[in-house]
Image (cartoon, rainbow, N blue to C red; front, side, top):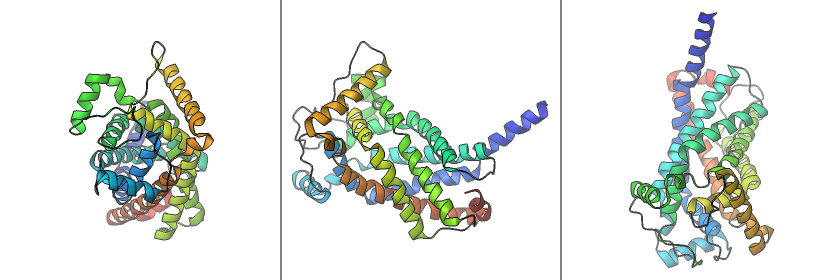
Length: 323
């Protein structure tokens, strides 16, 4: 009895701590960093539209032209390094958790959309709790020095990632590093839906035959999966960006959960009152353009890096059978 329990524990441990999960995590991190670097200016345009209420919604090229004209040629890449650091850590954690949980849960059995969704949610929760402070800091650094149309936005003066951490903890308390955690936890549905659709489409294209998908197939299903997930969750993504930026007055004298719910409700209502229902989707064009292209390229690079690595390790056939 004790031997069987020990054997089960060792098997679970091997499922979690394996070279295969590490390959998935590194491939996902490298793919996401490369893809984000290519399409980073599109993310800059999206973020400005989300947090600067007085900036008129224009096409993405028009927004980028305004930013370059007002702030210089390199302004669309402002905050690149902290974003890349956050993204690298975040995707490493997410891909590692997703594939290790999948290996532990399924134990070699074929997956299903419901399994992919539940595993994606669990991996997303771990990812949010671990990496939210990095995303709060990178949002502040990315927007520092920007020329806002909204005069109520307070300027910040951070010299880098560590200084931003130190100033936020000193001036706002350690809890401020987890600003936007509640909507982020709700937003774990975004990557969960994305991975559910992506993995489901992969299974459909393979139709039970273990083979490597073509670059075009991977790019297209990555784009479709991300587009669907983004449209469904975009209003909460806008609120998440505003909360991470820290330019709001949070309720006091009530529990953190109630305060978070009240803040989200107030921000959503105020946005609808100010811009109408379309205000909830302000910046969606820039977001879709950026996130769909980035995700498609990320999945393409991830699949190719993982495939080449598994072939070098002699694991390619097992890899396709499991996925």
